[in-house]
Length: 79
Image (spheres, helix red, strand yellow):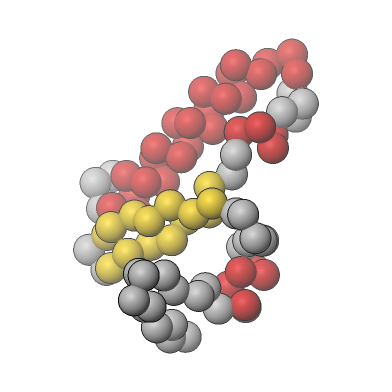
């Protein structure tokens, strides 16, 4: 799949990929540089996970932050 970079630096993520990653208008993505190129990683707002485990909220937040950091390290080839 190919997309064109506009004069403002924007690109359109193909519909097939947006659907697979559940990206909608207003969704946030992170760009991670890797040896292979640039990875686009969906950002899941921590607020969306509120209530998942109310008794252990801080533990859940810490684990999510650690997983996100690990994914960034792996994607950039550091880990």
